[in-house]
Length: 221
Image 1 (cartoon, rainbow, N blue to C red):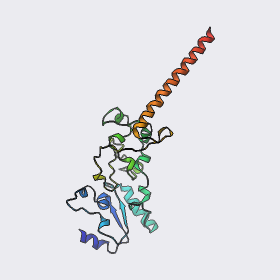
Image 2 (tube, rainbow, N blue to C red; image 1 turned 180 degrees about the vertical axis):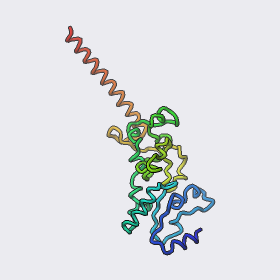
Image 3 (cartoon, one colour; image 1 turned 135 degrees about the vertical axis):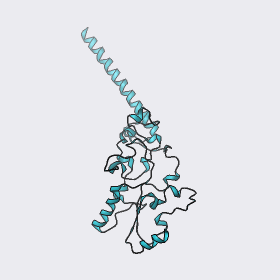
């Protein structure tokens, strides 16, 4: 297979590494990598290599890269990992429809709890959306029907190099920042702050209501 790759790439203008296997080696390259699975860029060194990772990559992303190259006769701008910025420049977390729940401190604590049924953020059950760059949350899958997070399962980070060696897919990321209430805080602090804001609002409402009742009672007397 290595010989075939070298033969067909000899006269190529560039090589597109489709999927995480070609881009990074994927799960079969997990430590200690007994099969010696090797990504394309560790075999071919004299050609531009465009990585389009994902397990598998999104169909519209694949066709988009080819369309761009045919239309403009050039390689799209790439990020530091060699991925097209047009599809890999934003974190899944940035455009996720569950993002407001993250900012509000509303999380799924375990699968099938009340938070899961309400569609809360999956960060605490291992979602890797905050550290994964891909177009899943905008382009989605199957003509835009859905994507893993929408189906109730956290992102496993399959478009990132080495995702298979970074612990359990259900292990929570640590010290991810949020922007709820105009502050930077981790998920636990955001949740605590959210509860505090709600509690404070209830207390203020009760105080105002009591004051109005007192004034009304005084006017009546």
